[in-house]
Length: 181
Image 1 (cartoon, rainbow, N blue to C red):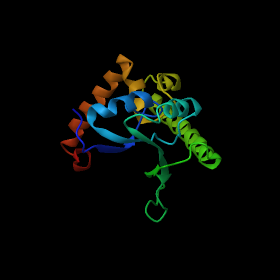
Image 2 (image 1 turned 90 degrees about the horizontal axis):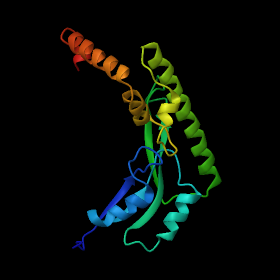
Image 3 (image 1 turned 30 degrees about the vertical axis):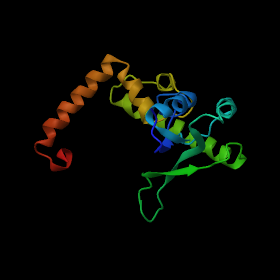
């Protein structure tokens, strides 16, 4: 029996970014966990027309849904002199047809592709066997760190290199407080 006191999940990722389930799967799971409102807030992307159609077909679902997005942004220069860190801004009740938001999302997605490709180049210099195609495998739209990690873990060679690095850092941390931390 579902309690009258229902919860809200206002930050939910799907297969479109780094979540595990589709929008419809999430929506259908919500009643089991007593969630009355769910906000779909994938990284840097709004739901496409196909997903929006599925959601609209479920407008009368017992769990109400909201369209949102978790946008990646740089920290202000005053706070981050090296311009290396980012923050995430959660937007709710967004218009998924807004051209400016769609264009902004496209730019963010292109930046993510560039970032992943640069990391792949660096990892290859360390001996890892990883490629962009493996990162894109089973990915719905947005690419990020979880996809890179999954691609690395596909190959035994990479797992062995990771084990060696973990052992090396554990040894070095005995004499280096920075590494230990």
